[in-house]
Length: 25
Image (tube, rainbow, N blue to C red; front, side):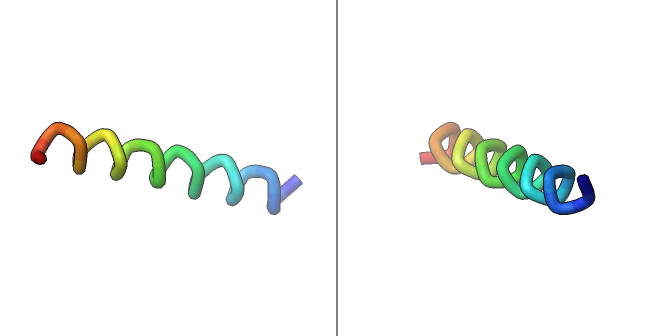
């Protein structure tokens, strides 16, 4: 269960970072 939450958190962070990177390009 804990690993699932960490995985979701990292995925959300990765996606948000990619979106921000695309916006600032």
